[in-house]
Image 1: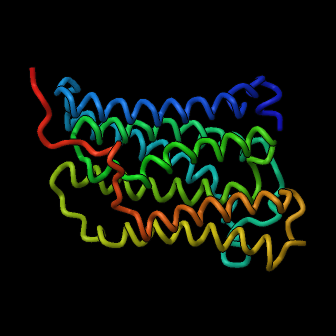
Image 2 (image 1 turned 90 degrees about the vertical axis):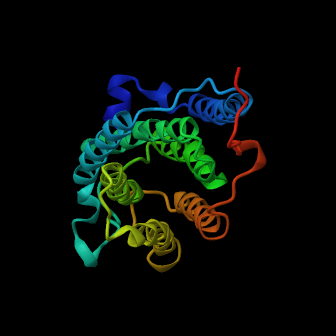
Length: 249
């Protein structure tokens, strides 16, 4: 599409580039845990910084939620935006979504600085290290558009809800809808699986823009997320475990 070719942005979506970034993310996360465990030199981020970060996430994710809304604008008659024509504006919002996945890495830094070892789960690191590669690959292949953006839209909406909740609780405000947030998180994964299955098995002839083979990527990825979310949500590998009492010097 014009966004990539006109501004020569292919290097941002080169598989070697985003794969290297994800590898660095994982290695830096592991090293940060080791440093935190051996000596208490990583300062804890302030509550005001976390609040500011939550606000930034809400603003950015709201921008993407509104911008990608056309993919679901048909309502129940076409909730996944199947056969939605490709256009430069939709690709732009998907590009912003791709970049926002790197912004999400700040979550990991906050978790480590606050020594919240239960939050540094396998699910957390797996999702944060792979989702950017998924969207980078789709943009690189020229398929970050049309019905494929449904996943980006629902994830952006989910993040608005999540970071809104985090912002409220940072002011000691009790969120009466807290228990529904986790339910919504898992629901988004199942909806993405339903989206993929619709394209693959129910109405494969309906979609004429996105090659159907890409739906296998969506199906396999979200199946892995559902597996981790339902069976290993709280599993923290030993290599990611933050000790409660570090050595001090």
